[in-house]
Amino acid sequence: MAVRWWGLSPNVVRLAAAMGLWGLGFGLYGTLWPLYIEKLGGSPLAIGGLATLAGVVTAASALPGGYCADRLDRRALIRWGWALAVPAPFLFAWAPHWQWLALGVLLYFGTSFSTPAAQAYLQVEAGNRLALAYNVVMGAFAIGAVLGPSAGGFIVARVGFHPVFYLSGLIFLGSTAIVWPIDRAPATGPPRRFIWRGRPRLYRWIALTAVLALAGGLAGPYVVPFWRTVGGLSVETIGLVSGLTLLVGAATGPLWGRLAERVGLPFALGLGVSVGIVGIVGLFGWPRILWVQVGAAGVRGVGGGSHLLTGVAVGRVVRAPEAGTAYGVLNLAAETAGALAPFPGALLYRFRPEAPLVFQAAILALVAVWALTARRGGVPP
Image (cartoon, rainbow, N blue to C red; front, side, top):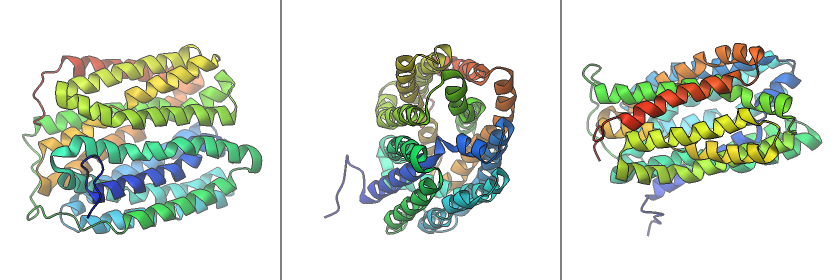
C-alpha cells in the first residue's frame, strides 16, 4: 500500500524529499557564495553580475520550459532538470578565477526549464490539497538548506571551499536518484492554447511575484557581506543565522497555506510580508547585536514562508492543460525582476551597506498595503 503523509501522494512526498536533499546540497555553499566570489577576486559588482546572470538564464528558460511542460512528458522534464545540474558544483570548485564561475552558473540555472513542469505536476497530483502540497514541496528546499549553511561554514573555516562543492555535487546526485522513480504525470487532456488576454487575476499574481522577487534581489546578495563588514559576524555565525531563517521559513510555509484557506490568499500574504518587514528592520537597525540578528533572522523566515502563496494562487486560476505555460510566465516575470535587481543593489551597497535593505523594506511595505486591502474572493478555493 502506498504511504501517504498528511494526505499527500507518494509522488508528492518523493518530490519533497528530493527537494529537501537538493536544498541541503545547495545550502552548503549558497549562503557563502558571495564570500567565494570575493576569494576568487570578485568585487560587489562581480557578486551582482553573477546574480544577474543566474536570473537572466533562469528567466530565459522559464517560458520555453512552461511551453514544453504542457506538451511533453512532465516527468521526463523533471528528471533531466535534476540530472543535468549535478556537475555544476564541480565546475565551481575547479574555477581558477571568479569569471569562470559563470560556466557553472549557466549550467545550474539553465536547468530551470524543469521548474514549470514540477509546478504543473503538483497542480494535478495534489488536487484540492494544492496549498499544502505546493508549500511542502517548494518549502522542502529550505528545510534541507537549514543544515547546509552551518555545515558549509564549519567546513570552509577548516578546509576551505573545495570540499564543500564536491560534497554538494554528491548530494545533488542522491537527490536525482530519489526523484527519478516518480510516476508519469497524471493525464490532463490535450494541450490547450494559452490565452494571453483577459487574465486579470493571473497577471495580478504574476506582477506581485515579480515585485517580491525585485525586493529580494535588491538586497539578498548583499546580506552576507553586510553581516561581515558591518555586523562583524564570523563565517560560522553567518551560516547558523542564515540556517535559522531558512528553517523558520520552511516550517511556516505550510502554516501560511492553511491560514490562506481560512482568510484568503491576499490577506495571508499581506500579513506574512508585514512580519518579514519587521525582521528586515531588525537586520539593518542593530547589526552588531547578535541576539537581535538571531531574532530578526527568525522573523524574516516567518515572513518569507508566506511568499509561496503567489504560486498557489496561479495554480488555482488556470486549468491543468495550460498550467505549465502559466507557471513559465510566472517564473519568467520573477526571474527577470530578480535579475534586474542586483546591479542597483550593488550601487546602493557601495553608497551605504544598509541601503539595499532599507529599499527592500520600503518595497515590501507597499506590497503589504496592497495585499491587506485587497478584496477577498479573488482566488477560488
